[in-house]
Length: 76
Image (cartoon, rainbow, N blue to C red; front, side):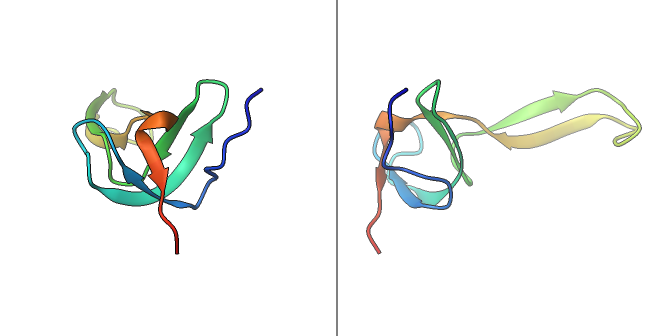
């Protein structure tokens, strides 16, 4: 498995894609896929079914994974 220099909790800047220029904290690293989930970036609206937790169902905003090559660690 490849080792990455970006870890959970690091501050990163998006260098490619729709959210280019945004900065955020890494929520999780998906090492096997080579992706990261960054707080507040690449947010998608997901439909959820009604359940005990959400009796009416509806929509939620969820951060989606970004390829690790599209983020750069911010020093400091």
